[in-house]
Image (cartoon, rainbow, N blue to C red):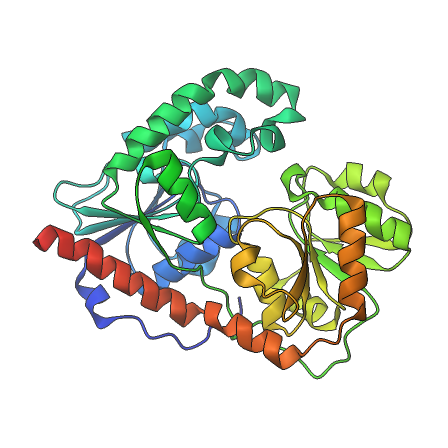
Length: 378
């Protein structure tokens, strides 16, 4: 982001010796935005990770001491790292963190498995228990026979390791009630919800007349279910713009009619402009939180979303968006028709999004860090 809103970090954070740990650093997605704000709150804290591509991460993260695992030295690892999944637990456990008061892991895979320094407390901001091992098996492996052959036989051991590694965490924080339930079921642990930071100081409405096209902003990968949107808008012959890159690009292009336009990668400024000008955002997949719908709402635009996952906590039905309850072309088309007929209030949509701003995230994390450290004193 170019514009950083004013944020008040707790003064007590300056007195903590903190180590940060993140699964891998090869891009700037929602998880990396969480880490980025923690890096701003704890300047100088070392960041431990499986592997790192410095030119793909923000300057705020890159300014910290970065410590990668032995996987960083494997030729071609940046392209093929997902095939090394069975080696991730051992790689994270071989890293040795320095003396610290607090380890904060931001984890959707193995970051929570970093062994805390002696005497340190461990707070895990858990994006989800390891998706590949517990949920979304077919979405990740079903269409790729090589991945399935290599990784599927090892999933039971990964689940066992993931459960054991959760015992190294003193306090869990997560990004939605949806994932809170998953942590309870898979780890047998309670967690607190602190919604991830959405830069509502950057994503703002503008004095432009919206309409003329609908919008998707997403990685082009199977579990996002973008084929639903492509088929629906091909049939509607209404303009749909798709921002993003990924492995599904060729397949989606073959499905698409002339009304569907693929824009590839776009800068934050370009995405903000698209949010402001679109009729509404279309979000056909299931996400644990889903930062994109909140960004669109921060720009005053409504959302058409599949009624499962984090959007049930971030979108108010008939106020900031419309839900469809089945992942079918017909259900999506019906929701599009409802959204197109409704008169939306951009100010009300924007006001709803403001509760997910950066300061709310920092305040929530300050509360949870305090509780985590108090446990040691007790």
